[in-house]
Every structure is written in structure tokens, then in C-alpha cells.
Amino acid sequence: MKTKKKAVLNKNQCDHSPFCPAKKACPLGAITQKKKWFFKAEIPEIDLDKCVGCGRCVNFCPHRAIKMK
Image (cartoon, rainbow, N blue to C red):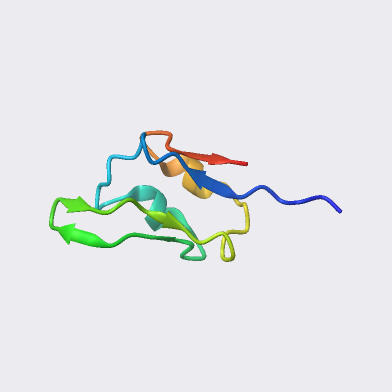
């Protein structure tokens, strides 16, 4: 049985922007993020149970912090 790839976030490359385009691009809402204040947020989290491996988040991440593994 072949395992599907899932999105993995490199926390060192992420800028923690509360306006994360990768989070908005996920069709299943697998990427969530808690806001600290208006221009700063915590590191996004990827729910691997919701992730279907579509790769949209990879295409929308401006810092290339998300890879499929």
C-alpha cells in the first residue's frame, strides 16, 4: 500500500504572518494558526489527519516553508 505525501512545515522558514496565504489556500482547513496580535501570529499548524496531500499550500507559501513528504 502506497502512502500519500502530506504537508510538512519548516518552522525556521515561516515568518508567522497572520495573513498566511498557504492557510487560506488549503481547501480542507488543515492549516490553522493562533493570532497573538494584529501583525503577529504563532507558527501555523498542519493537521495531518485533515491533509489530503493536494499541495496547494506548497504553491501558495511565499517563503517555501511547506514541503510535501
